[in-house]
Length: 118
Image (cartoon, rainbow, N blue to C red; front, side):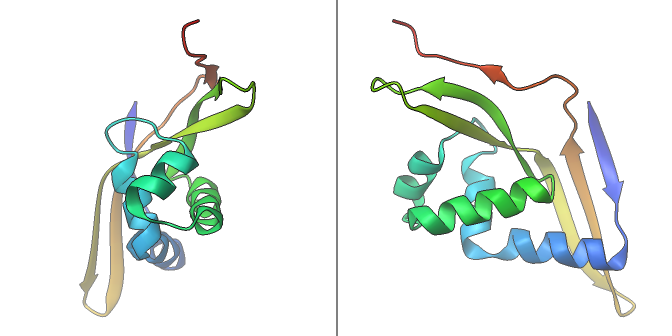
């Protein structure tokens, strides 16, 4: 289900600032079509891994990305697959006010586990 969020001035500022950060923008783009792990995003967009995890956590807190699934590596380590919740976003300065319109997918079901086939 999709909803459009109408945000207050400070919330619009926080979300737009998070989304306009270079690393965060790459994470949102990199997870818009399909889920990706932090390591995949780090390698694909040359984001230092620690910075990648920090941005993902900040984007999760704002509701802009979510953990789509967890899976196991061949070594048995559990890793998370992240997906952008943002379907579209517009930020504008109108009449001295920062306006943001963000179309965010809302998910009611808990995160599933996607283990690779054996």
